[in-house]
Structures are given as C-alpha cells and as structure tokens.
Length: 325
Image (cartoon, rainbow, N blue to C red; front, side):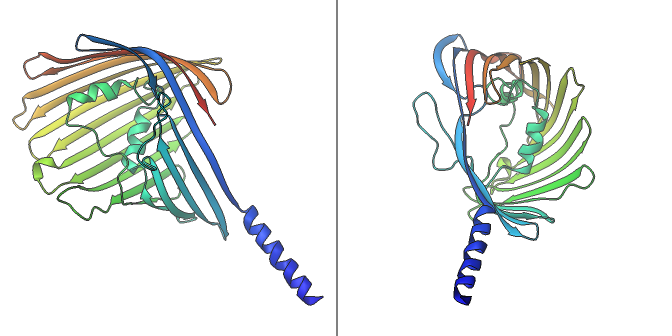
C-alpha cells in the first residue's frame, strides 16, 4: 500500500512538472506582388517579407519554482516565394534563465542595441523593406550587427518603468570577427517610451571599428502614434554619420495608415560631406483578423556622393498579405 502511495506521489509530481512546461510552434508568412526600380531598371516580382520578415520557430519555458524559469527560442527566416530558409536557426538560437533578478540568455540573440533602434522605427512604415531609415541609411557606414553569434545577454527587472540591458559577443578570433558589446537604458511610462543605447564593434584593424549610438522615442496620442530615431555612427577616426528617422501611424478602424522619413549625412574626418541619403515611405494595412492582414506599401529614396551626384535611386511598391500562426 505504501509503495502504491509513493508511486502515485511520484506520478503526480511528474504531471505537475509537465504541466509547468510549455513549448509553442509559431511563424509568420508574408508575400507580396510589386515593382522595384533601381537606377533606371525596373523589376516586377513576387516578394517574401516586405511587411515583416517571414519566419518560423519554437519557443518555450519551464517553471522551476520559486519564480525561476528556464527559457529557450529557436527561429529561422524563410522565403514564401521558393520555400527556402536561412542557415539553421539564423534569427534566434538561445537558452537562458529568468526570475526576480531579470533574465540571462546564452547563444544567438538580438543585441540590446537592436531593441532600442527598432523602438525608433516602431511607426516608420512597418519594420522591413518599407522602412524609410533602412534605405536612407545606405549612404552611411553600414548597419550594426543586430544578432551577433556567441552572445551573452542580460536584461534587468523593471524598476518603476526604468530598465537596462547588456550584451557581449564572445568572438574568439578577433582577426575574422569583431568583439561586439552593447548597453541600453529604457524608460516607459504611460504613452511615452524612451530609449538610449550604445554598441561597440571592435576589430583587429582600427579602420574597421564601428561605434553606434541611438536615442529613440515613441508616444501614443490615441488618434496617432509617433516615433523618432537619432543615430550616430563612427568608423575608427575617419568617418562619422548623423542619421534621423521619423514615423507616424494612424489607426482607423481595421486600417492602420503610416508614413516615414529618413535621412543620413556621412562626413569625413575633415568635416566634409562624403555622402547623403534620404527616403520617405507610405503604407497601409487592413486587419482581416487578429492574425491576418493585407497591406500596401511604397518607398522612394536616393543617395548622393560628396559632389551631389546621385549614385543610387530606388523605389518599391507592393501589395501583399501576412498571416501569423
């Protein structure tokens, strides 16, 4: 009898532990039909991921008791057009712990700098190919590394709206890959969301070093939501970029209308302008349900060199549909 009671107790404990664990399969499929114009050439095609990147993944957590949880996420990008996917879990691949101390993640994760940068583009016409800053900033020194490999990430608890984060990428061979460190501070209260972040990408060659600083803000007025981004980028001691992004979105029933603007000025060490870029974009989405929406988007931008000659002229228009699962 006692043995049976012990066995039942063990089974009950196991069942409770299983009930405290969860794993979810999720994804996003985005396809659109449109036209791209680049430096006088026109291309009509079917696109994948114009509104947001198509992807699928798995995530889960286990309640370890006492407020402690084990967490993981695996995610890869994919193309709706031909069914191909990225190399392995190229977007997210990490395991970690969370609790009253905050959270730790080990593996391939978003840099905390990316969190703040994306905040500044929240209402700048979606977060992918129609985002005005993405096109305008091509005039500058290049993008920051958004998801470094071999990364350790820590996020603090929220203290009355104030939080902070830290990421460091452990690149064992500095000759082929930079050491990447980032820190962010964020403050949220009511309709206001502010962020400040800095990321260092240190290479063996000083000229290849990159330092990124971003200041961002969003505010929800109810009838309209706005976002702003200021980014400064430095390359060694040779170049410096000053970049700006502005966005607004207006919800009207099931519609969400948005507009964005971006500009970049890249200067040499002597202070002369090396390149300039600007872009604007317009977009609209219509929610068919909580998980499915149709959209239309347009972006137009150009880049000019030091003497004002246009070196890149680009536009994109597309109509599409996105489904989340």
